[in-house]
Length: 125
Image (cartoon, rainbow, N blue to C red; front, side):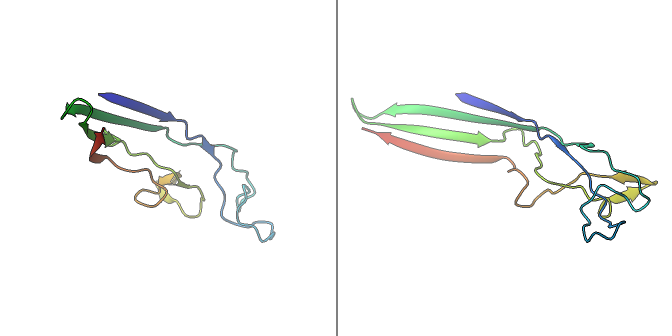
């Protein structure tokens, strides 16, 4: 049996205003419509955690010939790891006047894989 624990620091993001208060044809700015500035690196993205496991058993057929049975589990604890976030203030949800930045982009190409299992074998001779 063997295993692997992967930890990744997903870093920080800076939210964007999604508006163009100074008519510069650029909506990817940190200046809000009221003139205030969005703080840099204000969103701490959640870390990535993944545990992979492998069980392998060798079966001898003759002196030099054998078969290895392999069972592998990737993301064994099915931890949700996200890769992208909505960081524009104009596209995020508001409840009770509070901005909810960082809506995870789950179930798209950029979200990390859910738990997966794999069976295999290897012939040696």
